[in-house]
Amino acid sequence: MAVYARGIAGGCGAHLASISSQEENAFVASLFNADQTFFNTGYDPSGNVSYKMGPWIGLTQDPQGKEPRGGWRWDTGAPLTYTKWFQDMPNEGKKGDDIGMYYAHRNGRADTKSVYVDSWDDMGPTDGTGGLILEFE
Image 1 (cartoon, rainbow, N blue to C red):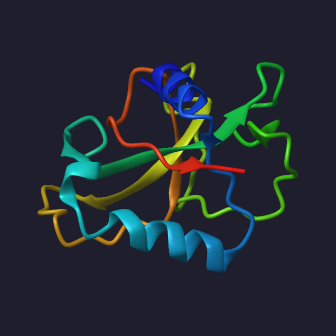
Image 2 (cartoon, rainbow, N blue to C red):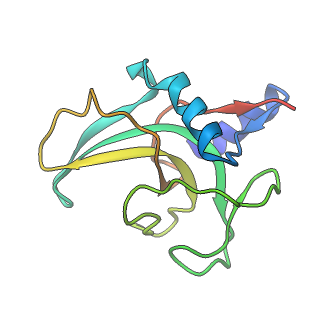
């Protein structure tokens, strides 16, 4: 899905968003949190967590980046001066989790509908939602 997100962004004359400050992250998160259609929710029994995956952002890990935290960069080439990783993320939960998206989870089986998502996780190209945050220059 992430590959398609980049294609959609380019087709719109935009790119996936680069987030450079706490204030910008709070603003972006406020745009999509009121609409549950931006999220994919579920339960992962292997980790015993109820998750809430949100829109893609333009955060990518270089293939030669040291797992799990090395080599992260914005698609635009902007410096990665601010991060808002969810606790213990990025974690390379599975090989290829090299793309950033909004994410949160709760331990056990839980209703995540009221969870406000303003943190990020590393996910793979087939994970996630159809949501993406576009940035126009």
